[in-house]
Image (cartoon, rainbow, N blue to C red):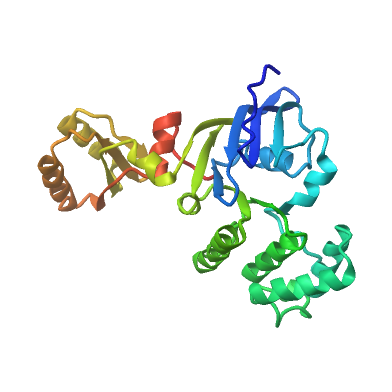
Length: 318
């Protein structure tokens, strides 16, 4: 590898990763730097390379090409030490359903060779913090999805990791539980200085991150703060929900001399900043009165618009 010198001021440094399954590339020339204490999201549709990167970062798979360093430690030569610095939460639950919550935590802590008195104290502290102290003796299989995810987080935090790496942490959870989890993520980041790196295909989850990287077909397309990335597109987006998408798309094209996109039953048109706002508002009002239009929204560009702009593909979480 003809590598650039890695920036020693960065907490996690990923440099020019290439990874393939046989002839199928999963990651190509992927580079990324994270600062300590930030929440960073890897956003992309399923099959985009996020899970492969998760496996490399958690040492589940060895590197093929490229370098990763964590606090200056090299993944190729310091894997044993690096594993003590990482807490990981997998997309699929990793609890033994027949054991109690306490037994799950105790057995996991033993894998890190934590002394029993210190481990028990750590379990008590984290169980209290995550509102699990009354659930410690319950079988894991009796817990709700949200509570199981809390136990997974406690497991990952038992060895006091420097970085928490999570694969699709909100998958299968209802919106209310997701919000509770994000309160915990921000607390860990802001109060404890834990760096959080998560993969997600949920746009609303990515919007909560300090920074994100958008991944498409194994490559990093763009990175930055979610709001700034969306604002960089400029203008507004006119969205119409309708059962007559082709006809409305043609009407918009004739009116603005711009090309709208049809996404299922929705027509979306990104309007540049120099488009007359009065003209836009007038047309939006006219369209809202059209029986074929179910709803009209005029908004700032979203992460879905960013993905479309940068990749040429419409956003799909599947």
